[in-house]
Amino acid sequence: MKRATWLLAASLFVIVVAVPFFAQNNADTRQWISLFNGKNLDGWVPKIAGYPLGENYADTFRVDNGILKVSYDKYPEFGDKFGHLFYKQKFGYYILVAEYRFVGDQVKGGPSWGLRNNGLMLHSQSPESMSKDQNFPISIEVQLLGGAPTGERSTANVCTPGTEIFRNGMMVRGHCTNSTSATYRGDQWVRVEVEVRGSEHIKHMVEGKTVLEYDLPQIGGDGVSNFDPAVKKDGTLLSEGYITIQGESAPTEFRKIELLNLSGCMDPKASNYKSYYVHRQDDQCRR
Image (tube, rainbow, N blue to C red; front, side, top):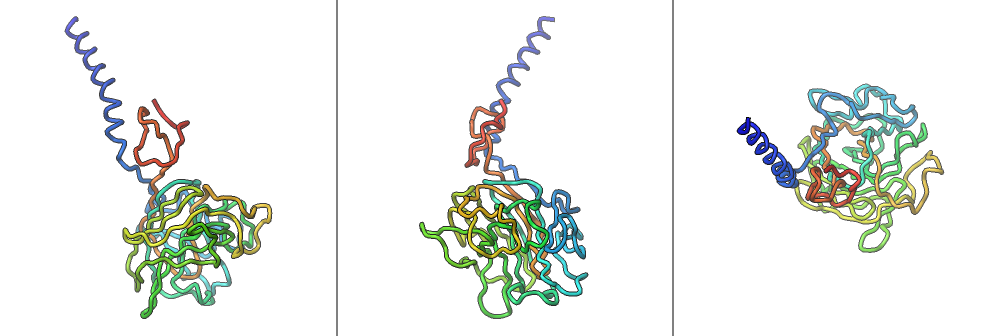
């Protein structure tokens, strides 16, 4: 009996000592979240201009063979049906990774600038706050572009529908700002990463190289129509919001959409502490 009691006490001691050790040991392990499950659109909701929230006109957004597709094969013509697919959860501090490619031809009636043009919208307003006929959500757009057979055309640019950004301490004039990326032609897959730090700083990367950085994303400017004026409060800093995938008339495929949350418990003594967090949310700490 004494031996059994001793063994039990020794086991408990090992557990008590080991738990904080392993928690600390795993602090550097990055916990990526797959926003796209490869099977269906669970967790996402479509909003297409001219249609109510949740109506996926002509099966614009779909999943086929593990690929999330923005498709127009069931459209007679585009008709300014700008679409957006919203992820269910808001984020403020994170790294977003997407692997995409352009396929096929632009739908009939699409805008000339929409050729091989798509985007990832950051810090977006909620889908519920968009009007039925609103063309774009108030947001920051990571513009994805495919190259023509000749000439240069960068990707991971930034556009500002209903928003403003700053670079080098000055407000950027103009709707879109080009990155320094290479040109990606044809149907090759391209990996884009975006590091978002609330309303402080945003950085775009393509194939591992930083191509664009800017600061102080906020509501303001033009580029959005049919919005609710109560939502567009110019000068409001954007510290968080929804992530959306665009549909601007160019058939596009996504094989990966992942997110690393950079906001959480920053107390090293907590079991869910992560060394890579940059934004403190110690109310989430677990002892």
